[in-house]
Length: 423
Image (cartoon, rainbow, N blue to C red; front, side):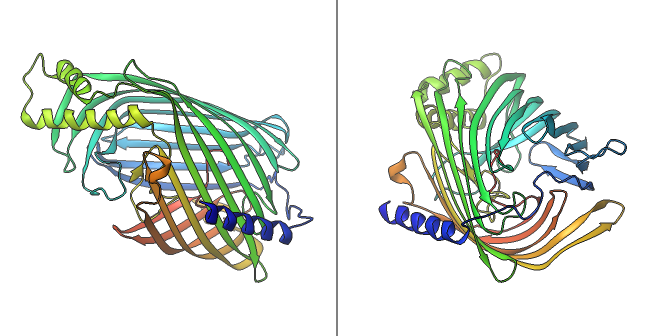
């Protein structure tokens, strides 16, 4: 631990020395209009397949008045039907107090739940939880100062959904809940960000620190009462004329104020009584409920913090592949800027002003555990390369190809990796 701390301090002071007298290299409240229209075909395990359409609009003008207001809308049809909509950077107090609002409504959905939270777990050892009538509503309030170099924010979401079924990893039905089991989740996150870089969207030198604390009150009498503390530090070292070498350290930890029900037998018997009284459960259904009880026991004892896998961290693994009460991640990425310009483009489905095209080469490693002492007993790595298109409106179009111990993943995303909800 001491060695890691010393390495981090060396990087911090080297960065600080290289950016003394740092200034933003462009306006942090850009009003350049940009949009993206894109099809979204999907296949969700246990939920089905279909087609969606994404519309994202940055810095929407109202007549001749330029604004920083962004809007995104996603419409989904097929087996899963619903909408996602949000508006961001609403200026309650111009360039000082901003508001984001988000709403989500779906008729059904699904989520992979891994039976074992250990790093050496089998990637095929999961079950699929089917959801019904899912809705989410909430937003974020941001106080931003000093040309967006310092921010305080609070985020709150209310989630309502129902668990309708459990399927195995081959999508075979194990348990069907009739009626679906309803649940509610209230999520609140408070945080602060110091963004001492030369640009918020496309930093090339400087350091960014984000700290958040998220309350996780118990959803029912069996659930734990805990909170999650996250730290995210990104350092940018300038290279060549306009390129950068980026480093990231992320730490997420759950701190349990009061444990939930950790009696696996009690949790299992409760599930049996709720689902196998009216009808007789098969051995496969009982095994699925036992798996659900095991996952609940671990969460009730230790809580659950962040996760690894997906488009942001450990990119060669499926989203949410690794989760635990304690999470730590380290990453390095060389972003080679091939161009540094302002070139408008309009291709009917996409319009913006191109400010840069990058090649990227990255390496990442991470670990999850139930306790801090167990971190890095096991770890997983990802490495790969990608291409990015950076625009003045704030979009960063990213294509990455990542490989790791469980194969490879292709990532298409609209943002840099390593972000947090605070950014």
